[in-house]
Image (cartoon, rainbow, N blue to C red; front, side, top):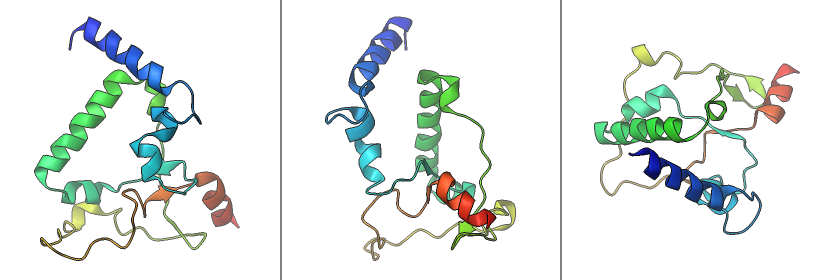
Length: 137
C-alpha cells in the first residue's frame, strides 16, 4: 500500500468513526458493535487454544487482520493485558491456560447443531470493572 493510499484510507476511516453513539458511525453502529449484542462488555477474549484450533486458513486471515490493524491504528489501541478467568464472580481454573498440553478443539461436522447463542462474539465477553471487583470479595 502506498502512503497516498494509506492516507486516503485513514481519512475515510476517520470520517465514518469520529462520532461514537451516532447512527451510521462505524464505531457505534458497525458489525463489531452489533456482534457484542446487548452486552456492556469492554473486551472480547479469544484463548490461544481456540485460535490454534481454527482451520489454518482462518488462522492466516486472523493474523493478517491483526497485522493490518496494527499498521493502521495507533500503538495505544493495543495495550498489554493479563487475563484472569472468573466464573460466578470468583477466580476459576482456566483449562485453556495449558495450551501446549491440550488437544485442539474439534470442529463441528457439516450440518451439526448451531451454537446456542445468536451473537458471533457471545461467550467470551469481559467487563473487567464489574467482574474483577466481584472476584476480589
